[in-house]
Structure formats: C-alpha cells, structure tokens
Image (tube, rainbow, N blue to C red; front, top):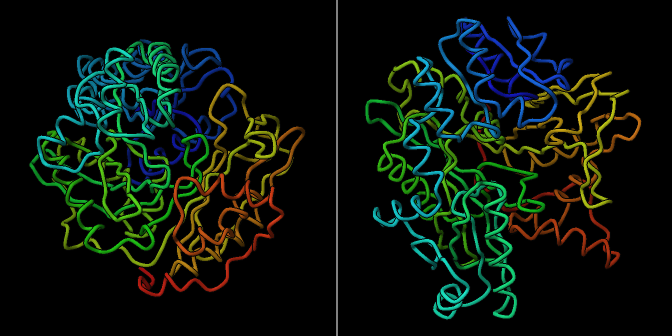
Length: 470
C-alpha cells in the first residue's frame, strides 16, 4: 500500500496497514524528510520539493513511486489528491487499486451542481437555490429575488470552505459573484458557480457512511462540525447534541439513500445544514476519509480505515446496521500550529517540547515529536485530540483536562489549544445549542469582557444520551 499523503493521516493509515499485515510505502517531500511516517513505513520515497504542487499533488511522481516499489494499492488519505478523479483514473489505468470510489463517481459528486441534481432526483432536502450554473450577475439577482437574502455564491468545483462568498444584501451581490467566479477559476480551473440560501445560524452536521461493491450500505451515525473558523472545522463531536431523534434518523437515511443512488463504494461523508427550526438540507458529499473520522471510531469501535481497505479489496461489508450501536459521546479538537490572537496565522517552527495528554479514553493522532520542524508549506494541523465519555458532560470535562495537559512549545510556535478551551467553555457550546457562529461569539464575548468558564459545569442536555463503555 502506498500512502499518497503526509502528516498525521499518513501515519494513522500506516498503523492500520501494519495491523493487517500490509507492507506500506510512504511518500515525502524534501521538507517532510523528517516526518514520522517516513521512519514508520516499510519504505519511503521522495517525490519532490516542498511545494505541494510538485510533490503531494504530482500525480506522475506518485504513480511512478507506486510502480517502482511494487505496491498493489494507493490510499489517498484526505486533502491533496483524495478527491481528484484524474488521480483515481490514472491509478486504475496503471493497474493500481485506488482506495476510494470510482473516478466517475468522484467526478459527479465533486461537482456540487451535479451532486445537488442527483440528491434532488432522490427527494433529499435541499436549500432553495439554483439547480444549474449561474452565468451572470443578472441571473443571480433574479434567483436572489426568489429566495431572498442572505445567500451564498459557491463554486461548482469547490469544497472544504473554499470558493464561496456570503452575500448579505443586493448591493453586495455583483462584487461577491464576480469575486467568487474569479476565485473558482483560480483554485479549481472551473469558473462555474451556483447560488443558494444562506443560514447564518445553521449547524453543520454530517453523516458517515460505508458502502461495499455488493449493494450493501450503512451509516455510522452523525457528527456535529459546526465549530469552525473561516469555514474550517475546529471541533467535532458525536452524537450531535440536542437533535430530535426523528431529524437525526432523517439525515442518516438520506445519506445512505444518496450514497446508494450515486453508485458509491467506500467511505463517504454526507454533509447537511441543520436550520434552527429542525429542518435539514443537503450540502455536499466528501468522497474520502474525513479529518474528524476518529470521533466516529471512538463511539462505534469501528476502524474506518480497515473497512476502507477491505472494501477496496473487493470484500463485502463485515458490519450490519443492526450491529452498530454508538455509545456515549466523543469529541475531537484540532490542535493547529496557529495563533488565534493574530487571525489564526500559521506559526511554523521547531518543537522544543511536545508532550501529549493521556489517560482513559484519550486518543491523540499526531506526527509531532520533540525536535520536529513544523513546515510552513502545508496545513498547520499538528494533532487531533479525541476523547470519549459516557456522557457529553464527561467527554467535555475530559477534553478540557487534556487540552490543559498538552505541552507544545518552540521558537515562534503557537497553538490554538487555549482558545479551544475557551470555545468548549462557552455557554452556547456547553448547552449544545451552538451554530457555525460560535467562534465569532467567543471573540465577541472577549470584547464585551465576559468571563468564560474554562471547565464546563454539569450539562443537562447530555442526560438523554448516556451510554456504557464499549
């Protein structure tokens, strides 16, 4: 198995491969020569310079490394080439098994307009908006008149919070529309955009699904990913707190239906926006493993990478929906090398101290270690701190303790761990009634001089979903 990625996810995939007796080949750029996965994997191949364009996004170099080392399969991880249909197609044509869906499925679901059309055909709820590309400001204004403001202009090829612009009123529409079109062309080589209603107080909830090549599909519950900065996730948890069971079941059923209708195979995540009135609407499909997959693993006891590998090997699902029973609550915090006090600017540097927390039901996925040089060329994610508790209250208390126990320091290096403690101490977060605006609420509370509790008190909303140790 060649792992076409870097950082913590490459190391995480390599560990499951080792458990299954699968030989691993890591790839690395010159800037990542000291990465933990390079020494952990059975073999490592340098594929290019620091620039991701010439290394982790260099399809010929990665495929050449795979063929030269004699691997049978390629796992793309997340980000980089994980949702690139051309990469999946080139792997297939080279006789390599791509751990993920077929190139044609990635292409269809990666096109947000085509994906919306497919979901609409299957009666999956959607936000009001265009069903085809919007070519001009005039057309956008006409749609805006029918759906109202605020609205969002999105790139058809976008995702992960990139290639989108929010419009508060008609006066800003022309500028945001033109800017989003230009940005879409720059980022994705595709200037097509569409328009849909924007919910500023919505919650971002996603459902994890697995589908094999024999028509079997199941879900592994949902994750709340509403805590974001600049449309990038910071905290995820499962189950999503305070959601009526009927709504929860509706999203789960919609995700399984959508995956089946798309002819999907592998692990996928269906993202939904949950409105304050309890209605939900389809957003997009992630055709890969998610950064936040460990929270689902902690709650269900299922190794999602293992399931990906078995499905890619042509085996049927080893699980049945009735066998899956998520217990308790799991929460993940992304520890980034960035400074929240300076607009979350990345802070690369060499780690003088890197001491991770431990204890019962604590998991840390990381590639960091004392002496590791945090590079400036890639995403600042340094570690994923994941905890489990019998209740949400227990999990949040454990998370707060673990964030306080994290010891990371080095010249110029800052992390967001203290800020994350502020967020989980925010009254709206503690009550499970937060939205995608919760990070902004924390900054507003600072400005207003409000004192935020660093350690959450008893949370009555968790009493409804207590569980036992899996």
